[in-house]
Image 1 (cartoon, chains in turn orange, blue):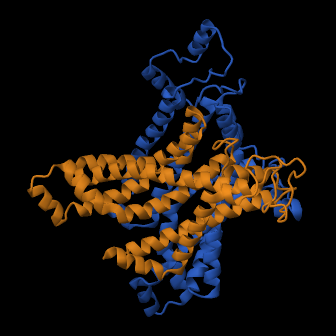
Image 2: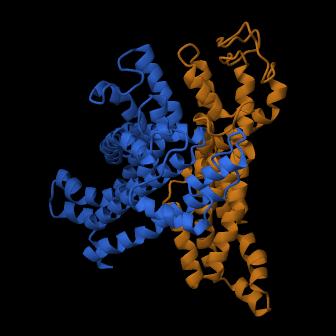
Length: 278
Length: 308
């Protein structure tokens, strides 16, 4: 019922639908990247160093300073950036839901302490802790996935806790308890399954944050390392190379901006659709 | 009022400890020490190195030593710039970063508030849509894309302004592009925030009262609406500080500005443990301090806070 209503509201919101369609297109391009692009991501064309876009030869976005096809690399970057976004949001989902639901359900002093910890962590400059972690643990793709996920679960925890606080007052929880269900069972069977709406919204809002953080790190040379690439790496290379080849900055930059815009619209639209009160 | 200030100051202390402790633990507990550089030193040399930096002591002793040094403003020696201590490097870079950050913050507040109020007062008119679009641009085009594009347009193509560097520190021309690049995302957020809070404030009953008692529109806006509308913006200044500090790392890198951000990135790339940790703690303290100021300022602006 609620889902049908939400879906109808979502469909009537052109910005949100536009965002979702653009996101779908970007995911599609990212997944099919190797099939669509005529050149491999690491093939070096010595006669085309920093060459402008050339449609006849299949270099839609031109080439970078090493003579590699930018179209193929931008799509590869899309794959890595989206992967970072999704995996970080899944990690933040696990930590945030566990933490928030526990705090909200147990309540009282434990809740106070747990949320005070979240408040403290919230006021910290979390990008710095990601950088610290990458300095100490080393810079690999998986480190970046995990560290970003490990620091952006705070919003999720707050939302889940608030939701749990209201859910645990509901009759069906009381019914379960009077039937003798344990706390753990109530939490996993009755509370967490009812959290999905706000959780999906905040996952959708976490993804652009994660993508932005990854690009930020990669731009500085602290994130994804060669031969892997991501939008941040491409933008960083493009910025160094922009005097002669502005397209090497503009194409990955435009992809990043459009993706962030689409996530913004889709996330806002979904929030309005699923939670009309706010 | 004083009790609020004291409460806030006391409340900030745990945050500081969390920052320091987390940083310390990450520094000490992760595998691989600062001397694992690939060169194999003999066990005696390694032991001497560990001893010289007190890395052979029990963890809690190292922690107390670290706290004691920090309390004296000593962040320890830099592991890669051997002749400099971390404190010296921070002291060198900080004035530049501070100037950059404060200018960007001031610009963001002034322009952001002006845009937001302007949009709110012309709600749903063309000017309002322009403000909304502008604030969206600042949010979806991150610093590290905007800064190079600004350089490319104004520094390289038009040659109106220097494309990078800091000059001798007193030349305005060198500061314009970095400050704008750093301020843009914050301008967007403040414009967005102040627009919606202004719209909300204008619908409050006390505004109707003010109009009803015959105050001219200008005074209603200045005396009544703006005071209520500015509160969300004030509480955003805490996150905005964190954003400006994060952004300054990018801007200093793109424009080759000799601030803390540049040292920080170099240190992170070279895995200079003490310098990275020192800068994180330093920035953490600044953010905590600024949040404190914002909290107190909020209490001053909103008399309801202290009474609760």
